[in-house]
Structure formats: structure tokens, C-alpha cells
Image (cartoon, one colour):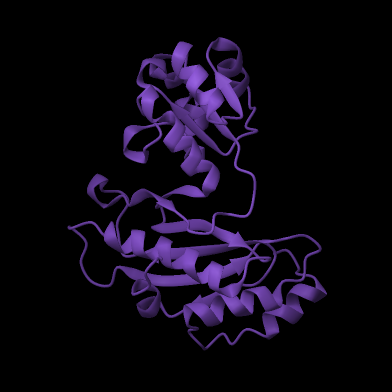
Length: 238
């Protein structure tokens, strides 16, 4: 097991392991405990009462964080002709309108945060499933990233503003960034509320018992802070 440094251990000792913090207490403490010499990302990790082995219990969606993520979001668009021109005008960072960029991605290039495609490009994009799929970046209609050309400006704008996609993993956990340490407590609380509201609204009808089982807030380098899951489940975005 890797040994933690002195600063991490000092931060860890300030977290009451027997306490379930309120959402606001958790984001406030996460900011206070930040010790890195860069603007750390604040993350939320949620354990859900679902069984991801069943297709009808896979929880995934897109959510617009009211205060964004505090970083530049690089958008890649698979499109051709007029659609490519629309995407370029809307601010897409990369346009994959042929095989060159597709082959580059297949070889391991991932200098982008979100991939969007028009339906007529999916024949070419399909072969990227083995590399984009595990990263949760494969364009598809359920995620709102496989769209007709006329929707490209809106979706690109939303992605740049802080729209994120989440998906439960095979261990029934969801891991999502909600901002930066430089954000105010209220901004982090609002972003967390938007995420939790989306998660609760997407509860599968087939699940039973407690849905939000565990919630942890942490910075990139800091210790986890346990949040009361019942209070988290009642949060709402602005």
C-alpha cells in the first residue's frame, strides 16, 4: 500500500470518520483541507443501490452544472460538410471529417474531453468503440452526443459551459467532478445539488431499498469526506 505524505495525513486527521457531514459542510471542509500547489478538482463519488449487471439498472445521463467545471472543455466533433462547418463556427476544438483524426484516436490520442457525432458519421466512428467506450466517450443518442447537425451549436455550447455525462460503473459507483477548489462553497454546493437531483430523478423503477447508499466528497489529492446520503438525496440544483 502506498504511503501518504505528511500533508495528506494532516488533512486526513481533520476529518471525523464517525461523522456524516451535510453537503455544505463537506464542500467547505474539502476546500479547507486542500494542500496541493494547483487548483484541485473537487469530486463526488456516489454508491447507488443498483445492480449494473442488469441493463434496466444502468444509471446514466447528462447534467448541466450551473457553475461549470472551472476548466476549458475540449470538444471533438465527428461531422462532414455543412455539419462540420456548423461545428467549427460553434467553437468545436477538433473536427474529425475524415479518416486521419479517427486513425489518430484509434492509436491512442485523447486530447479532448467530449466527443460528439452526427448520425451519418457513426459508420466511421463505430470502430472507435473499443477505445472510446471504456472512457465513456463513445457518441450515442442516449447520452445526447449523437445528434443531427442542426443541434451541434446548442450541444457544443452546453458542453463548453459545463455539461457532463455520468454513468454508473460495474461496482455501482458514480464518479463525477463538480468544480475546483477555487470555487466558492455555494458554487460547489449548487453543482453537487444539480448532480444529485439528476441521479435521483434517474432512479430505475426496478430498484428496491435505499437508492443513494453512500456519498463521498474529495479533492484530487485530499481525503474522502463522507456525506449523509439522505441529505444528499434531497438536494436540488438551481
